[in-house]
Each structure stands twice: as structure tokens, then as C-alpha cells.
Amino acid sequence: MKIKVLTIFPEMLKPMLETSILKRAIEQGIIEVELIDIRPYSTLKHKNTDDYPFGGGPGMVMLAQPIVDAVEANTGEEFHGKRLYLSPRGRTFDQKMAEELSKDDELLLLCGHYEGVDQRAIDLVIDEEVSIGDFVLTGGELGALVIIDAVSRLIPGVLGSDESSEDESFSSGLLEYPQYTRPRKFRGLAVPDVLLSGDHAKINRWRRDRAIEITYQRRPEMLKNVEFDKKDKAFFKSLKESMAEDK
Image (cartoon, rainbow, N blue to C red; front, side, top):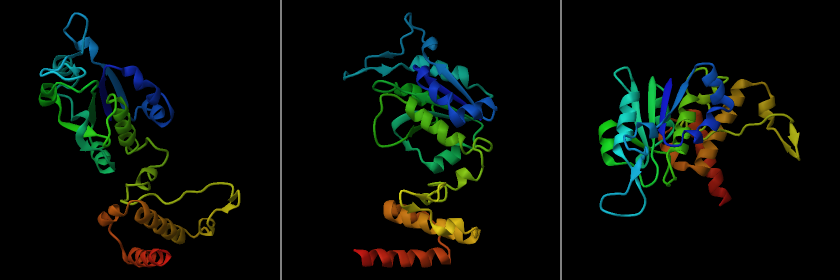
């Protein structure tokens, strides 16, 4: 996958891309991330990328011209993907959207700044606005990194085990079950015996039950989209009865 990031602060993204899993994926050629500085595309003498908003108001607005020219220069006929603008008014980014985007050959992420972007740039060269949550950041760079990380790890070969991305929170519709490693006991707390049993059927059942339990306790609204089998239903019934008795 090729990911192009349009920003006026490319230096903000470099440290994350030069570390850990993303660094290895880039070095191995599994993903390609290109940081594109919007400023050189400005036709103004001092390479300005923002100006005061029409109608008045605080702050500055990013100019349409440099953005449109930058997008068009980097997404020709050979571009096969989506052009996204990181915006608090966009569709909320989640695991389902990450899975959708991971199937594209290319992505372009536009990072806004200041009070936002001239609407004409959005109308002309952006396919969709995307938000990483109900809060406002100083710019789109952190949101772009979130999307790059979440999407990249779904691409085969990026993680050490392809099963890792399928077995975590949200991928199954449930929050993830508890994880343990050595030592078996730490400060009086022991690893559950079932995880040391070697019985994979029992281990899988324990993990599924714990995932259901944690999701019910912390994000119960998620359960309405989860398909339960007979064993799930039996456990969920006993869980609700047990929690009702504890109240």
C-alpha cells in the first residue's frame, strides 16, 4: 500500500514512521509512506498556505490553491484509492473503516491546520472527511498517524503474525480478553490455570468468555452487533445473572 500525507508540518510525522513496526514495514517495502509538504505548491511569493476567513472570525483558513495543486500533482490517473481530509466533522474512524481502507492500493491523507481548510479544496479534490473522535486537535497530523498505524497493521506481513490483527479488540466485535506472560506469579497474582493447561479448546473458550464479559462490563452497546453461538448465549445468560446477584 502507498500512503501519501499532505501537510505543512511533515517533520511532525517522521518520528513515528521511523520507529518500531511501521519502520520495519516501510523498510521491507510492505507499505510506502510519502510525506508531501504543501508549502512549495503555493503560488504566492512567500509560499503562504493560509489567509483570513471571509466573513470574519478568529484564526486563519488554509488556502484552496496549494492544497488542490498538491493533491492533483500527487494523484493522477494512476492513483487508485481514496483522498481523505482529517476533520472533526467527518465520519468517525473505527476498526471497520480501517478494514475498508486496508483494501485500497493507495490513500491520500490531507492534514488541515488553523481554523480549517477552504471548502472549495474539499469540494474539488477530497473524497471523504474523516474524524478520529469527538474532540478537536491543532492539526490533522496526529489523526493521519492514527489512520496509518491502524490501516497498516491489517496489511499481511506488517505484523509478526497475521492472526494478531484478527484477534484483538474490535476486530471480532468484542473487546480483547486479558493477556498474560512470564512469570506465572507476580506480586501474588497468578496466571489463570486454564492458560497453562495446554488444552486449546478450553483456552479458546476462556478467552471468548472473558472477551464477552469485558465487553458487557465496559462497552455493552457493542454486543448488539455480535453473533452469539449456543455456548456464548449460555455464558452470557449466566454472566448477567451473576452480575445481577452482585448488585
